[in-house]
Image 1 (tube, rainbow, N blue to C red):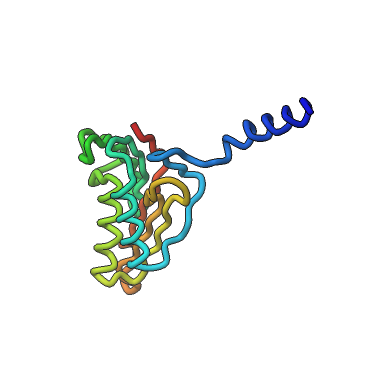
Image 2: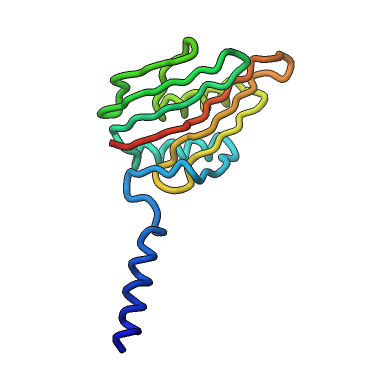
Length: 150
């Protein structure tokens, strides 16, 4: 009987890590594609409802330009510090990334591709916008490479 109880306890303890992130935590390792503007708006609304008010995020701006990395620190939902390396770039928080994506839809961009975290608050971790198929090299992308809730 003791052996069965011990096996049950070990199984429960071993399974604790697979539950997923706690409230407010973000797992950048797993993401899902966002199909359209409506799904993107729903993800943004879930972010606003459950995302942390304080975090540090680092993302890369991907375009036909020099590689740029931006790190922002957010407190009480506002950017309080930012550092850009590699060239000029606008500092964006998670809401700002959603805003860029939704504005691309509003401008009828030729292509908007977005991915959000699968577990935890939906951070927009990968965004690619091609504003016009007729213009070369105007595409821009953003890839979140680090995120830490505080």
